[in-house]
Image (tube, rainbow, N blue to C red; front, side, top):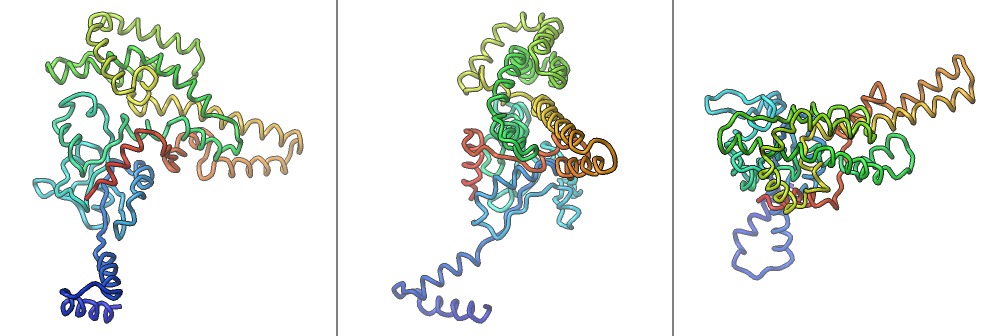
Length: 357
């Protein structure tokens, strides 16, 4: 190949002024392929890698390779990024990634949007996150908000339990309940964050406070539990909701203009809060399926060593490589993310990835 390359380059030097013929066309194709460079994509945490790998596959033909990795893994490989003082950058998280130097067509970062898309100056780097072509962010709050869409959860459950039940419609109903529980608590949270950013006030309602107020939803998603969470919110935050009613209404209108109110508040919710809610639903389905299969084995084999072997085989197939139904339900979406490519949020991410140059 090296000899062929030298012949082509020699040809290029002696015939650049001539008309294009088949040899010249082959030469340009060869040189284009030879010019491909790798793309380095830094993400916040190792569990983010599978999600971003799927999205960056859309441009894999433009690069010799696409390496989606973390700062720590890059340092371990012997090619660390250095901070302003020359120290190796090995920490995880969004703040540290936004300090990476030399971003460009062959080095980008992929991060969670958080509230940088809703609140001006949410971070010191908010404008950079919004405008840089080399900072790729989720459209919704975080990666979790994308991988826990109804279509994605439907696919996870089909892959885990092997049934064809329509979980998508069921989860859409549950997310509607999740939205109604968050309204107006999530709006209050956004107002309090914005007041903190703009007026430098002590933040009066936090992400962890909201998560605590709706924590019972991580156990049950029935109407009684939703009512309990709504009562908790009004008992704990009713005064603030009343005091900031005008600002809450304004926030509601802003979210409505973006198509996120009232039906898509879950896209704006903190990712781990949403994930805990959806995971509780998934975990119960996997548990119920496993229990039904164990009951069938008991009916067929009774008790004894053969039945225990069958149960072990069932759980090995159902949970592998995880050790329990709860771990399986929790880890599966991270390790084997499903992408709803029809979702407008995913479409926006892919468009920005495709625009890298």
